Length: 207
Image (cartoon, rainbow, N blue to C red):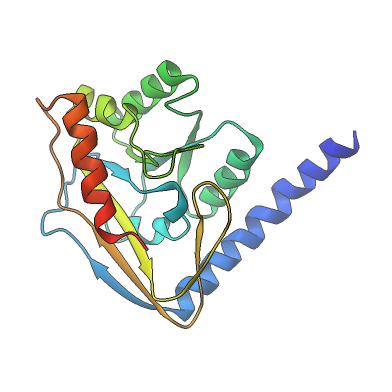
């Protein structure tokens, strides 16, 4: 009973504090955006490393002035906290992962893409290994024909947690440099080769 009460309280307090922290970091940093020349109007798959997800909603707003996206999150309690934070940024979520409940999650993601929603995914989430790429991102892109755009945020100074993903928290009063790749078409590429391509390009701007 006590645990349920504490979790219910955390679901109210932690996401609100998290949202305020994100806004504070963003507003107090200088921003540099490296964007692709061609931004698709059709739904795309946005990918970013799990440890680099904190500031990614702000990069997404450089692509869509009116957000229409679902982000894949874990179906654990931590995922529920992230889901609540995403609500503050008008972003939806799909609970699960492409490791656990893979078929269900992929079906939901593919359906969302076909309905006009962008999909946000951490290829190495929800539990790693860090900087690994699962099959899910390739499958959903190839099944729908959606292009893939890779995200990175490189802060000039940051804290790094001791978690498996080495989660990065940018420090205020520095510079946030955002990177977004040109849209990548994975049509006709073998899954193994597509995963290698994604992994190599996503490693170009890691902190």
